[in-house]
Length: 252
Ligand code: PEP
Image (cartoon, rainbow, N blue to C red; front, side, top):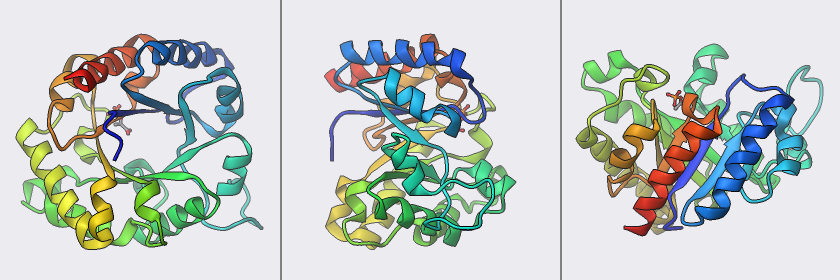
């Protein structure tokens, strides 16, 4: 597993070409923060332009269709993403699971389609607040991992897991550091059950209200391999603050 923290910005349904200046600024900052691996997932419409503007950072997508092509109006295949310059795709984000009814099986099919064309994948899992309150967070996340992770050969080399408690996304609330560490340990154990020894190479990111002012403490948790960042990735100013905190951990 790369020891470099992996910091990924998810722009969600935000951004026009005017926002390419933010991508350029993030890319410039990445040049001096080489101890961090940085990527952004802009909306589909900006992938190609972002790839052209940003030389150093990874550029990816927020979703793909599981089919290779065909009569799926409005959808985008993994091969199309690759053709537009994407190197990875996020699958199973809780907003997709909620807004589009995506099941674990859908997420797995998307992940396998992405791997088949050579993209890396970030598979998102995370419990709702009600599930955490019911003491079921670990059980829910374990089931999501079992159902959502791709099982193709070599999958472990191209997969990153993002643990994103649904109740922490965009709310300004985060789990305690102990809870994040415990969940990441539980995820690692589950990954070993799925991928065997190769699981130790899979990075596990934390996502949910990561900001420049809490990034250092979250990234100091040994099991946390980086962060998936929504709101705070929309401006270079706030995202570079997180990248800088990650670089300091990379030096530690
Ligand atoms: C996300 O949507 O993946 C996310 C983590 O959002 P935010 O950082 O805004 O909580």
